Image 1 (cartoon, rainbow, N blue to C red):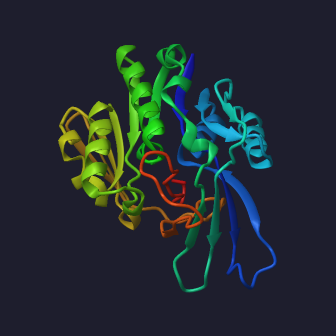
Image 2: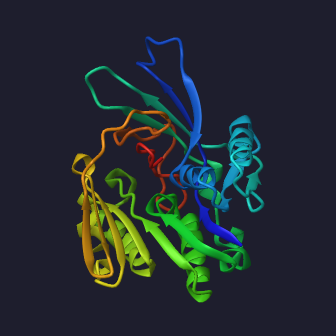
Length: 269
């Protein structure tokens, strides 16, 4: 049995200083569900990941990384003629990170309900989904819904991370509708403090909720009790996260139906 089944978009991340001046860069692969699956696999859990990559070198690297970390990639798909999404991450002294998306028409946005293995999700202990994948486009959003429905029908626990980035949604109202719907379907809800108003209907006493309060730490509500933990100061060991500030890919028109529209945020890419 799979412990955690998840689905999302694998991304290449190129990290450098100011691109116009630097001659060196680092290449990583990431994605919120991608990163989670690897982290859980390293902790000894059996994780399966569903996503689409292109038949290019970035796609091959994503698959190689997942296999190397022991993540089950049986359901991964390769989309011929597409390209794997890429983020350019610039770290600038004294300023916030700048992230530029090169993702229009990416393979990850082609994830569709027909790619979701109902039986595999039903045989898992938990399904984990995020609002970032739901923001990729209509097909990807429906794929997330199909996975959630499959888990619900099989009485599989559902974990949902809100991951709201304002510039990725056509409107706050649409984000509230989609994110609120998914939050209400979940058993375990993860969100940042500034996302609480987006999913108010889901903040019921019976739902376990984990709130990230940034430097102040985190709060957990479980069994109608609240527990608070102070923030920890820890050394950075992996810089694959791309930060919250981003610039959209302007090489092609954006489409709310099919264009890839998410961000990579320090562990939430």
